[in-house]
Structures are given as C-alpha cells and as structure tokens.
Length: 289
Image (cartoon, rainbow, N blue to C red; front, side):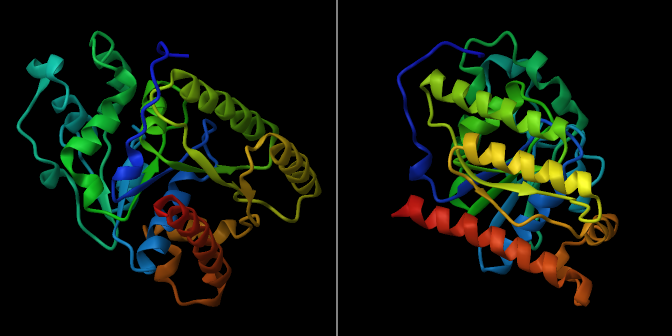
C-alpha cells in the first residue's frame, strides 16, 4: 500500500508495554471515550498505563485535562527522532511532554495533521517513525500498557500506529458507513502484513458502541454487521453492545472516566469496560508466555 516489502522483523514482544490501538477510520464511533475508559479500567486493575493521543483533533488530550499543546506534543517528539529533519528539531524531552495522572497522557496537537507532508522527503522508513521513537525513548519499558487513540483515517499516521501496536480494539456504530470502515481496516492490516517489516496487530475485540436499543433498524443493522464480522473479523470477539449513550456522553462532558461515578447508572458501563480490560489482559498474558 505504502512501501516495498522487506524481511519480516518483530521486536515488539521484547518490550514491557503491550500497545493497544483503538481504531476505526469512521469518525463518531466513540474511539476517544473507548480509549480513555479502557485505560482507566486497566489502571484500576493495578497496571501502569499511558494514553497516547495520535489524533490531530486532540480530543483524548482535552479529556485528560490538557489544552494548548502545540509545539510540545508527540508530533514534535517524533520529528526530533528523525535525523534528516534536524533543522526542525527543538529541545524537548519526553518527560517534559507526558502529563502524569491516574493514567498518563502523551498529548497530541493540530500539527499532527501535517505529519505525512513533513516526513514525505525522508529516506528512512516512514512507516516506522513512531515505532522507532517509542522504542528509543524507553517509554515502552515504563508502562504495562500503552493505549493509542487513532485518527479517523487510514493514512501514513495510522500505518505508523499499526507498526507499533500489538493489538487493536475496533469500536463501531451499527450503520452501513461504520461497517464499511471496519472492512477497509482489514485491508490495511493485510497491507501491513504484506510489507513484511512487522507482524500486523491482533484484533482483540469489535465493540458495538453507542447503540440505541429502542431503534429496530439499528438492532437489525447491528445483527447484520456482527454476522459479517464473524465471517471476516480474523477471529476477534464481538463484545456486548454499549447501550448507555447518556452515561458515556455525561462522563465525556465532565472529563471523567465511568469509574469516577458511584451512581447506579454507571454500573453497567463500569462492568463492560472491566470486561474489555479482562480481554486485553488475557491477550497480554498470552503474549508474555
């Protein structure tokens, strides 16, 4: 798709952190809230977790309480890691950029939208910029999990993410556009495999998100898409639909995880995200053995 084929090499299993991307090329499927709450579920289980925002919209960054990160975010750190772009380097340490919290956050900025253009002329492998930066920085040795919020595209930035991640979770809405986005994502995974540089990440779960159980058409579309995913989904689990739209919207507006609430309206969401974290941890344990 983007690059020629090379001999396969996979170094991801040698690092401490398991890297999981939350991805769908379709916008509005709840990737950011999914990444944020999955990270908090994993942290609640005693894991040290880093959220990595790679969406130029920076919604995960804002959700984690950061604003105005232009020039001091993951984009500049990646640019600093490329020797050929030395004129664009600025003094900046990873420790200066990561904000500590219940889960740590490596923020994004609008400048990420220029990533593909900025690196277009370099001779080093453009699909491995993020992976090389993450490994050389040592951050993968500092965390149990890195959860990546992905942009709603399938361009070079997403290819970089897929070359770093070992696992992905795929939230989707029960509609035709979202279903098509998931199928196109499967093709990108095959393209990553075909490059022969890294092993394409494992799909850990498909997540029907923001489902309105009162609408018969939505439930019908969900059944159709779920059946297609069982056929095409590379063996991934399809988890129980996330119906509680109001709870997710409320927590998002207040910049809280669902685990920050004690009211009964959040119990089902807390259980669902805990179940999702169990899927991730079970997979991670299998990777370590």
